[in-house]
Image (cartoon, rainbow, N blue to C red; front, top):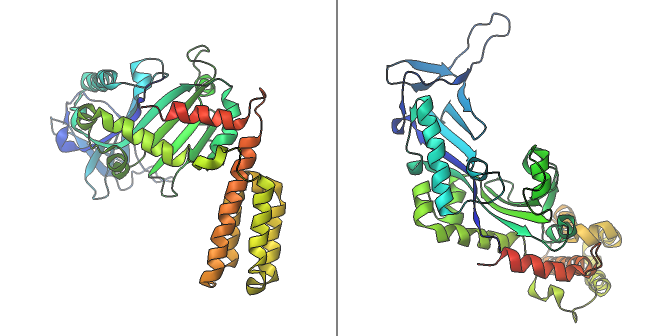
Length: 364
C-alpha cells in the first residue's frame, strides 16, 4: 500500500528573515511606458547587505527545482515567496516525500539559494501551500475509475500543465483548497519524463491546501518545522479531505437490495407532481426536462436539479422546499446507482472498483 506523503510546498516570509548578499542575482520585471521606455512606478523588492536596493514589479529566481519571487505585499512591504515540488527536488517526481525525504528536499533548496546569495532557514517560513498525496496502483487502467470520481462530485479539468489532461478536481469557488485525482503516468509523459517511472495504472490523489488558512485548517501546521514535528497531521488531513470529497458515495450505494435507478427517478417524478400545482407548469416543464435527459440524470443529476431549483423556486414555501430537497436526494441516489451498476471495459462492475478506491485511498 502506497504511503501518504508530501509533494508541492509553498513558503512565504518578510525580508527580515532573509540575508541577501551583494552577489545575489535575480531577474527583475519592470513596468515601462510603451512609448518612451521610461520606468513607471516600481516597488522595493529587496535590499542586499551592501545597502543596494532592487526595485521593480517582481524579481524572480527560476530553476528546474524551484521558483523564488520577491514582490510587494498588500501592505507595500517586500515579500519573499518560494514554491517547489518536493517529489521533483528529491527524485524523479513520482514518489511522495516521507518526513525524512521532506527534510532533505527542503534543505537541498535552501543550500541552492544560499549558494546564489540568499540565506534563509526555510523550515521556519510560513506555509501558504501544502499538498499531501498518495500514489495508488490500481487493478484497472486509471480511466476506468474516472466515472467514479465524477459520481462523487469531482469535475474534469483541462489544466494540462497540472495534470496532463487527465485530471479531476473538487473544491470551493474561493480556491482555498482542492482535492485532485489524475493519471500519474500521463502527467509524467506530458511533462517530458520517460516511460516506466511508475506503474501504468497509477491513480494519483492529492489533498491540496492552496492558502495559508487552508494549510492550518486541513493539516494543523504553519511551517515545515510543524510538518516535521506533526507528521500524523498530514496523513489525517489527507484522509479527512479524501473521505469528504472523493469517496463520498453513501454507504448504501453499493447495496444490491437498494432501489433501482429507474424507480428512484420515478419517485422523483411522483414527488414533483405533489407540488406541481403550487409551483406552476413552468417548474414542471423545467424539472421534467432534467429528469428525461439521461446525460444530466446519469452524470450530473444533483447539480442540474439544484441549478433549476435555484432559478425557479426562489422564495417559495417551506413545503415546496421540503419537496425539492427530497427530489435532490432521489436524483442523486439514481445517478450514483447508475454509475455503480455500470461495467468497466474489463467487464468488472463499477461497484467493485469503487470498493477498491475506498480501501486504497483511506488506508491509514
